[in-house]
Amino acid sequence: MKTTLALIGLITVTASAAAFANNDVKMKKMCEKHMAMMDTNKDGLISRSENAAGAEAMFTKADTNNDGQVSKDEMMAAKKREMKEMKNDGSKMRD
Image (cartoon, rainbow, N blue to C red; front, side, top):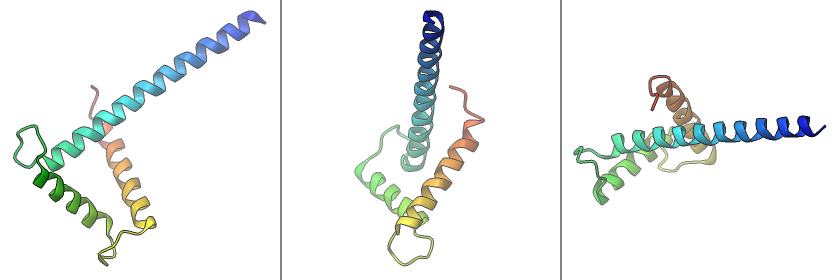
């Protein structure tokens, strides 16, 4: 019984560590994607004007019916597209 509990604990800790590492990879990919999109002068920094332009581009992309507003459904669809893009890009990124 003690051996079984210890094994379950070890598996849980290992799975949690793997999930945490996977979240770090996802976070890194998301940050790299946003930096690449928003850092238009490629100086490694995002200025206030670059941030505003990036936010406008993201809004425009999400506003699929072009009514000047982003609905909950449009936001969900935009996030799903972003996650799909990150997943596809992830196959190319390993660090």
